[in-house]
Length: 278
Image (cartoon, rainbow, N blue to C red):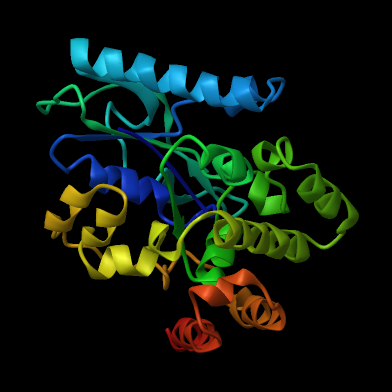
């Protein structure tokens, strides 16, 4: 089975792949495709291209045990960003496209999970017509703080690979001059997309993944219910800038978006208080 995994940026989708690769009969690939190759295609062409990509990776895995995806030292990490800050205070990506060997027995019907956050979120209304799809979400305050701590397009409130497939999102971000407002639009867009396209059971909270040692990923692959990894929540990451916590929390709480389907206002204020106290 081919399963497509998406999620809000900085929500733990790479951690999910890292954990799923510990599950028997499962391979999870971290951003293995170049979504730009889908831009010029019609809907049928996009679905066919993703299916063909999955088939190619499946053949490679069955014949040689290898597949191509973003990795570090030949393995999918639990976090694609390093812990060291550059002089500008931001953390850089540490992953690159590599051939990764998966040393595990795989039958012909093994579960292949392909993960892309932004492109698959924007394309979700189309993707669900052919593929089983799942999404990872995270407390919106923690998501914003992580966006502020890493160097990427979202640092400036842009997500080009989502915008390429959703003109309304691109136009909304173009009109917005405030970076935080753009970031909040990205968060709201993602949560709204999942509410529109996926049943609640197909949306997995980062916090539940951590609390269950990965077993919450049974929503992606049922065999993941056996996971019991020692995990620590990073919502209070010491690398997050405490000087912006209260401002970002206030901005989140001012919004009336679909994040409230999965997190209460009390969840946001509790995280804010923990970050301020810490």
